[in-house]
Length: 283
Ligand code: NAP
Image (cartoon, rainbow, N blue to C red; front, side, top):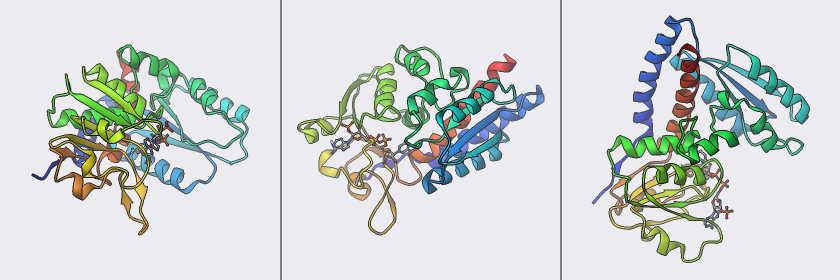
């Protein structure tokens, strides 16, 4: 059996077409959704993520503004910039590209963003709302993963979900969102014992570790749904996931590729959240 591929690229294309129409509708009502992106320093990976976010905004008609600040920026300077953007009426979403230089507290920055403009879904108030199942901005990568699973009409309720990784931006929230969908959720992390035993019991396995080819087919139950979040460069400089794709796809029922899987959906959900934020203005 070879698994059905869940293409994030294709789903993202479809969703972006829908968003383009929504943006046109909003513009007709006099509101252009606006996203402000703050980039500190010159980390090439962050620069590339920011460029691709800006390009995606342009494609669907969302206004975007990039604030490039030097590596030496102080926390106070950054908080002042965020405060100005919190007050700016034409900006509906604010994103501070992580990671930040050592002199700036990530927590302080995330908490300074108006939760109503927190389109990354990282603010403690939005995370709290997500936990108790209230409507809010959902963190983009986990949100995209749930959309990918639902796009194939895969049943989540009652299924055993195993999430490998417990970061605040991927592992923890994706488990929470799938719990909200009535799955039974197990988290694995660096201190987990007998991990293969855990992963082999998963009906839906989400892997977000950040190590090339961390899990092979022997860690996957026959027929499981495999969501590979990892983005890693292998020795040949090629992008690969946390899962050995060629082997895993012979065991899984559904699988996401790397690249072209979770990545394109993450940016799409950022666009979705920005458009939703602008829609709140016209409601
Ligand atoms: P992270 O903050 O580094 O978290 C990694 C998690 O993996 C941690 O919870 C860690 O456990 C766990 N881990 C590390 N080694 C392990 C081991 N040997 N056994 C079991 N668990 C282990 O990473 P992240 O931000 O969640 O990102 C994970 C991956 O997803 C990265 O490759 C990243 O590039 C990718 N990513 C992709 C997207 C996308 O849009 N495609 C978005 C975000 C992230 P402890 O907590 O115990 O340390």
